[in-house]
Image (cartoon, rainbow over all chains, first blue to last red; front, side, top):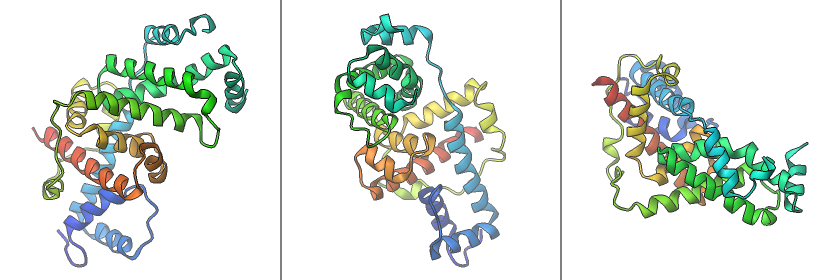
Length: 80
Length: 186
């Protein structure tokens, strides 16, 4: 692993802390430079993104019965 | 009709408008409740309680935020209340951050997100991983990363400071990523 300016552990910590934020700080530039040169940290970054993507795509559809029970529970079934 | 108009009508006693609001948001709220508790019956129960709270308190909704944001605050509270009732569950502790960041990598993750819709085994892995996180951490991860709220909005919904959200978020991300990595290597 490339550990010239910041360590891989710092990079991993920073990735998890700052993914999705607006990043222009000096530290962030150092992290980006590290990512450009370190394939392990680049893989780590990618796998954190994929983890999030998996949870985003894992959805459950509500059944028609559950909808009907909800309207009845709220006493709104006559408005359905 | 715009949602603001539907809300106004519902607030003035129009029951059809109220039913319309429920129908607009029920799927999102059910899905979120499921993602927190990973149980369909509990998710349905939480959804019912959330909309019951909405119906009872809609007259207090001032329209300064979106109705969906308001509903996320209600559903999050109901999820946490349910979790507190289940005190006997053990969740991962983050007292030692050293274990959160591991430096081993699974060979190929790239196809994973596309497999999620049909792969039951992967769903079990995702369920098992997130169930180890305490509901407080789950909620932050889901609001920020899955629902896409900003860090500031997540803090507002969860009634936490921005640094507290960031701290929970980065631990949750690292933990879930590592759990997924371990399961994929088996």
